[in-house]
Length: 292
Length: 314
Image (cartoon, rainbow over all chains, first blue to last red; front, side, top):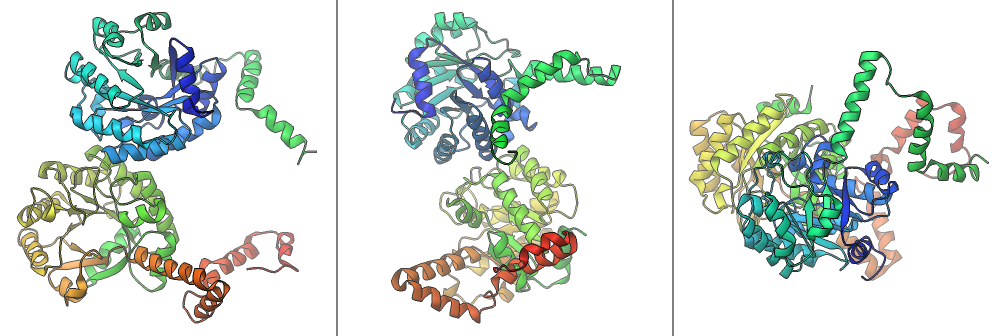
């Protein structure tokens, strides 16, 4: 850990905490509110960002991903992990992806073994993976591309689902040998999910995908720690409930003519929003200059 | 009337049209000033000019679209933009077409290389299957809002692995049959027999589809006597010289900077003398400051205009 970079902060967390929950956010505000609520690490997932832009993950370009990363890393001090999908192409595109995302202030990113461009039907649990060799080439290029040695390269394999559990474990261990700092995987069955941290010889991150059609196993933070996972992402934990709140409020307004909020409760809630975006500090600057 | 419509009329009414390939709004403004009738924006040109990166599929769709939108705003000419492979598969193509059309350009070309792509004249090109390529063209045609937005299908089959001239002709015809407004094949050399056989092959089956030609700067035209008229006589309706503004500005910038390095202020003085008689010498006027002053007089309160009194500057 060489300094105060975002990557160093994440590595310090990895050293200090047995398990790190990394909340799935999609913009600067959802990241800021998560940080203010006490989370120590946030995750910009393709699932959420695809929904945020309403174009789905396979259509997100590196430009949009890097722009979103910049906004988020400007808004929070805690480390951000970025989902770089399939790395936007071949090894040389993975290299460019690492350059862009690291420069945008992320602590690390994950690159997976799905084909590029990704297909929308990965949402249905149908994925295609590239060969072991092509995947390793992506990861090696990513490892070599980072400027800050603390920038975290996470290799994500989907092969447990598309090929077999063992293929996923083998790919994971090959990536660790090739220099990946962490493995992200998505085992389908409970037994596999319980075994993955033992079979994979390094740090393992889990995708705690609530609402998943395949009913992939879910864990509590205590269970993650006991099972041996180092980190988990929560792609839907915020996105789904936020959707329900929007539906409810809009529904109220259209049905009853009012949003349904208690006006008195709204006063502190609105103040909280304004505090979260840092208005107080800006008032101070204005009062001491142009509004003197 | 959309610029796409203007472009289609040009293709109908002119024997052929040509233009230098460019990268930026400024390049486009200069080309327009000289009286050209359309603008061609190349992917290699934009990738190197704006990002300092080679043309190997690193530039993204939003980067190309943003730049294309600036160009479309800066000139009143139809703008054709290189959309590479459409930045992915047929699904990506849909969004690519929507965004370029919204940016105000007249049309784009989409090629049949495997994504991520390589420069049309780089070694190691691979192409997608005919079915996949045609699927992408159909997706592009279905995605456009205006039928005047030009969709050009480009095939890189002539020099790609598993390709060849026959395959290129087959693809050119299929692109035309699927509804592409124009068809282009990339040729690996200046052998005009290839260009003639391609045109002949496509026009035998699809006689009405206009063909596009890349008078590529990567090919050694100086070893030939081929003229634009010769190319047009084979049946090509439009063509550009590739990387034109890129190379010209690289050379001009190099020469100026080298001269400045060697001669210091004397180089700047010489350059100023040169500019005095050069059409681009009055570049503040070209930039449009005078027009802004006029608009200020028209729209700003009188007291705002007092800022110009007793000041000097552009």
